Length: 377
Image (cartoon, rainbow, N blue to C red; front, side, top):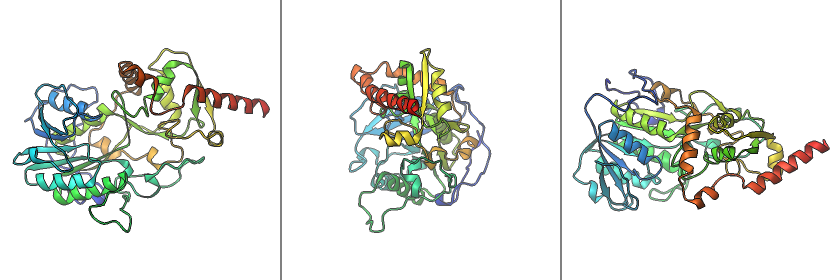
């Protein structure tokens, strides 16, 4: 792979295409040619960390992770440094790496500390941000019974700003803290940074259960409450597609800003649930209940019916630059089947009590109310 960049100008200006890069399929071999890199991964034991570390190791890279030491990572050959991003970076001092992959920065103050420490000892800073960094309505989840009609969110769209009374050093909400972190990184690593903004990250190991609810519920079979009329857009990305692509961006030294969202083509809610249906042999009947009826019966998008957020601009973010840089996607049915297989290995309590999604009795209650309303109409 030839090195160079998609972007060397300031991050806030958006991304301009530069040198082309070879596409690497999501199902391709992990064997690569070229010199291995020395990678420092801030994090590595959460949701996106383990598949990122494993893929990097399999590709021949030398990997160091930095965590608080509360969780283990059973991947041979990985160096594990212990500290705290808030106040203890001692283990990172005096060390050099080719690239730092920052995948757990929940506070811009953490980013200030790590960038100041590493800016002269690391060539490339890879930052996992979020589409919640975008400004305006794109940072919220307003439950509305109408499609979003505004401009599509793109890399150059405005970012969330701190409140007018913000003082440096104060805590910030999630979206603004990620947006400010991006600015801090570009200032410390001008022209040497990559920012990836994911949305819903799904797949095996997801502790949130936001996507997991759907494979589990559909596998249970029977009548499944499906929201709206099936046309609402949704966006999800398999954690393995995201993290493997990030490692390849690092390998090829591709700098710039990318929306790390999927899948490759627009996906509707109906296509998502039927794609998941392909991963199970259970007998399933989808009953589509209008958004207005769900609102009247206090059934919430995102929480009661996860992934589905009607009227939300963040459900159809532009990912063309990411795909041009090599982001590829495995079939939805594969993600669903692997998520379901992983879920079955969880403790019984975690299997029984998902963090998101309608409880069985509540789903039956709403379906009964919907059928009754149809009989009366």
